[in-house]
Length: 479
Image (cartoon, rainbow, N blue to C red; front, top):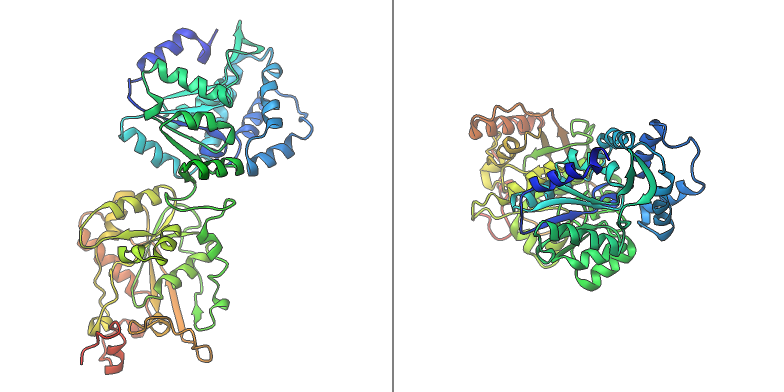
């Protein structure tokens, strides 16, 4: 016996693990991964000369069905038969195939898995991969992710090769629950205090056995079961609290509506948004002139096909109808009266997941003559977030939004379709920050925003009484 199946090696590894009261168990396919690990592992086994060039009839179709609808008995029947197909395979070559596939699989791990791993580790929990996929193939992936251990199907080894049988149980359905329970007993971990994450209805026995079950990207049957049992439903490709339906989050549906040609009461001048990264984390900052600014930024970012997580006043999130909508769109509430860092920590988690976070550093729309000042004053939240995450800060300049929704109006002027005002949106290059002084870096950010405004936005002028009145909420304009 060699490698991962060596009993002395395994016992030493388990003995080295710290004892813990709790653990978090994660399924692999369609839970941590976007789809199935099968095609990647098969490709490496084929490259190692262990699989023939031919394919199993219908397997490609089954894999596509699996990616959309999850596990099925036909697919698992084929997986169970894989032990016989592996008869005579050299164990070390299989382990090397798993190692070769690990990096490609790491790249397909859902973006919000890493923050969840860290959350469990910070709470002192062990993080364990629990999967039907053969142990020798997935152990390198677990190592690459820094997980504590693996509960998986094991093949029987004789003289350095597999003999075509499964050692113990095929880790699927109730047998996965039993395998996890045995692992927990060996490590003094009570399942009643532990967590489990899976996409599959067939993992219901495991989810029922732990104190904290989570349905992740659930298949249709698990979705229904989670609803009946009131299990939390999450998606590791979206921030916590953002729902999805058939793999689509609400903001992606709004992209269909965030089209300039559909907004007849405004015209848009957005020549290009290439400065917004097509992928990866970014902090988008802009000036604040109107309640319509959020929609204007949404239209700009929608051109990049990316959702945005907007920081906003907590009052918006507490509103009866608008609040749940704002949260479902991935908004992050800010309670300015408390000075809490939780909004920044939540925004940092979104950035760690590769999201775009939008902040209006002015915090609120300036009133009176301050509205017409060419030197913008900003809060340091954006630069503090950049210092925490090293995400690029992308400046945006908004102009004309106040003509669509002036502050003294309770609603946008949607009836202005015969002479709609022009909204100008410009996006600049990332702001170079030094991370030595939040005040100095904030000044850099605000200057970068001003540089994107039209010439009339960069000079001081005396507003008319009517213009001043439009900068105040209804009933608050000075006499």
